[in-house]
Image 1 (cartoon, helix red, strand yellow):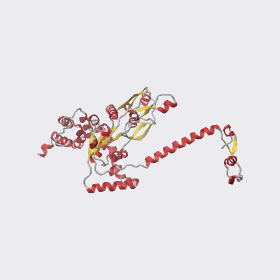
Image 2 (cartoon, rainbow, N blue to C red):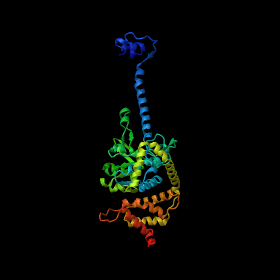
Image 3 (tube, rainbow, N blue to C red):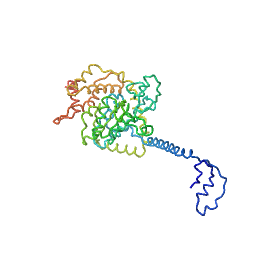
Length: 416
């Protein structure tokens, strides 16, 4: 124990403390050494815990950064098969206005692995520094309310370049965590009402990934529908009223055997890719070998595919720059709408998405004019999930789309 005067700013020596704290006979006659005096006051005693907390927070942040760096993702260029899904993902990276991807397939086919591999391909974007909403410094439609007010007032905005966020939406997430809620810490410490942003704010201008989306609770589906339709998230609760941008690429995956997706949400996905289990033994063995090598040494495995990854990234960057100059001839626009009409697609979202995807496909191959081949490469992905379900149908929806496309674009006549 310490003498009572320690809290009164008194001075004491380390040798005195050692002599009082040591009660064993072995310590009865300690060796006398020159004492170094240390001053301990109430102020120092109060400051010590805060220094410990600060250090703990810094160590936790460092540990989090190390953990993030220690979890490398599987290279996109190393994925075997899944051509539909990979092509749809590339189209959405080139043009986020396509509206996302719905991926349905068997269990264990690498759907989640492929989605998370997109992190390496995402571009850097300019954002306002320290803004939790990833606000754009130039586009008012992508600005949070505070940033928009500063932008209109002519206040200079400090910007930084950051990679696009990929946010995972877990099935067990609450509505408050998704939409945002009142900041309890500020309410208790400062007595003020403040908004704590949710996952939709973090996903703004990025990717929102929902694994097993067909098992998502209905109330969260409604939240996603509202945000996907308007591009904004509106929160009205606990006396707080806030509206912030929430424009994101929605990617969902699931197993059709575990349940169907609500038609309202299914229609919000720009593309629908189907994943099949690899049947060839040679391909299955190669997938197992590649995955085993990645698990054994992720960093060494990624180095093998650095060249392929760089080539894909360079091609995507060139396609994004070329996209604004890509034109769609009126003849092809009319044929796209005719296909949608003959397939009895509800609404005009099918026409819009197919046209945008065709432009992205043309930009990806380095062209400035959309051709029939560009439309053919995307039209099944864009329309198969928009057809009305016919339990008596004898062909797959994708096959039906291809048949109508061939008729409208005149490929049936050429075959004859």
